[in-house]
Picture 1 (cartoon, rainbow, N blue to C red):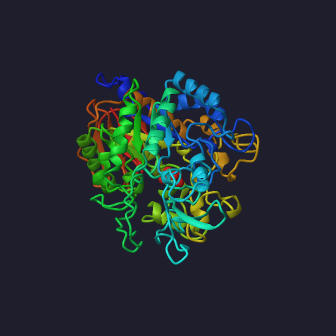
Picture 2: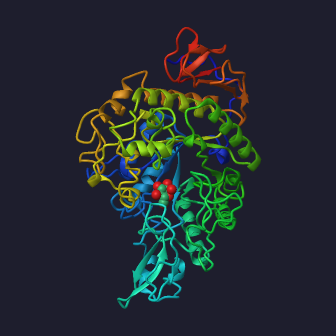
Picture 3: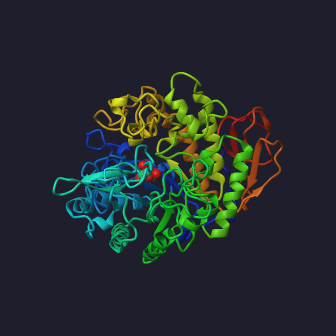
Length: 564
Ligand code: GLC
């Protein structure tokens, strides 16, 4: 399938250490589902360390680790009990240090997830808040309010939590009487911090230093757009809360009471100062589902430096949609001084091989969820089509200027797992929306490393989420034997990308057809994708890699080729 380049173009880029993140290929690990070294059914830190050779061979520049902190797993670890420790179920700080050393020895950077909008309800501070009286300093670290109604037994507002159900939970006061209510935008086990409180601000700076001192190279900031809130009373009713388009929180002018308020950037300016205390400076990437025009503020060099762009992730497999998203995001990144980011899959969305294998028009994340709910009936998933398109889309993404974020298992072409019994499900989004929302467990099922064995090589015990039989054919060990496998494609693409990477510019070339996207980078590295249904003629040049077999000088449908 691939022909090696005779020689790599001379102006391919040497990356300075301070700029490592600008065009990095970053591999997201969901630690509890990656590799289980001690046979308890949960992936762990030593499991990751044992797989560093795999990551090295894959050719990624960095790893992003989803939360590995002590947690009761009310939200897959995004409910943090202690920001400066490792979950004992996953290992120890010493194991963490060994993992960092092993990654660094392989030339792989490490980005960790920071969850600043909320802690867990088992965090020391929250326990203190519950034990302390109304109006105390301990309560002021969170968002407590009196309830409405005669006895305060109605929530302070009728707001809904992101995961369904209401966003306020009532506490029992130390004397046993029903008491105040606290705000939780997510699950009730995730109380929101009060970011107007200087102690909260200081404590997160300490956490950033704690991990930076341990060699962590950067941070992924969870719901970065939610921290600051205007909760002046009376609180508006949910029917008065302004709503933006689907997939976006907040408003174009930043006037929403809790999403994407301008004040949040004051926090990230302080964080930037901490990042810059280190050499090379630590990096940040914001998870901010905000109006596209407001994303650049999170990504500015005075702020976090980068922000996720989820536009491609929400698009159909469609040339015109891809083209306009790429143009817009590259322009935005250039204007803000950041580099663009690209992502198709992560631990929150339906895997892209599955999205692209659903009938046209159902490939977006929303309708795809509806499909999952009715899985087994209509409409059918075309696995092979989904994988073909996912490979083509990924190859296109890896040729774009900017950083590419990859999610564990996509290098195997893994699909979403649909048939998880309700009794095995873990996602609060499933439990808080009975019969409405299937949740995100389907993309979090432990990876298959071998085609046989108790947990397909994930570990020695039954995994914490059940793996389907079809995982066997997607296992790393099976794909390693197969030159045309998705794993082989990712390895070759990342290897070539490492040597072809060049200045952050892209020029569109005339495509033979509306459904073809063809562009080149300054060193002559070209990518051409056929989104249409019929083969098109390949442009001139040497094909160095393609996402699927080529035929007689033609680029088949749903295929990308790299040409130099
Ligand atoms: C982010 C995470 C998601 C989590 C939520 C609450 O969106 O990616 O997994 O549930 O924040 O922390």
